Structures are given as structure tokens and as C-alpha cells.
Length: 68
Image 1 (cartoon, rainbow, N blue to C red):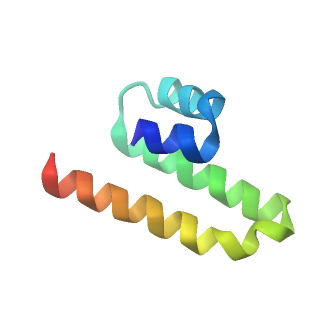
Image 2 (tube, helix red, strand yellow):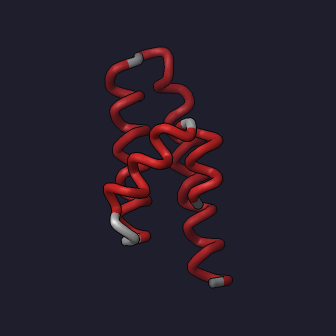
């Protein structure tokens, strides 16, 4: 999940959210979702990408829950 965050949000935000979550996986996922929501709300051109971002995050979350 951290690697995916670094790819999608950049290393700066991945590290920031990881530290802010303090090892809490669910909080890390929520911070990522909030990042996508801010992008959607602040950059109208990104609205079309929002559902894809959330689907990607949910699919990774389901995979991790199932396999780890």
C-alpha cells in the first residue's frame, strides 16, 4: 500500500500519510481517500479520475485484507 501511495501521491505525501497514520493501516487508507477527495474538490479537471482512484484504492485494500 505504501508503494502504491508513493506512485500515486508522490513520495512526499506517501511518507507524510504514513507518519500521520502512525502504523494504523485503516487510517493510512482514509488519509489517501481524503487526498483524492481534496484533489477532486479543488481541481475540477480531476473529477473524471476520482472514481478510478477510489476503485484502485479499494481493490488494493481488498487484496491486502484477503492475502495478509
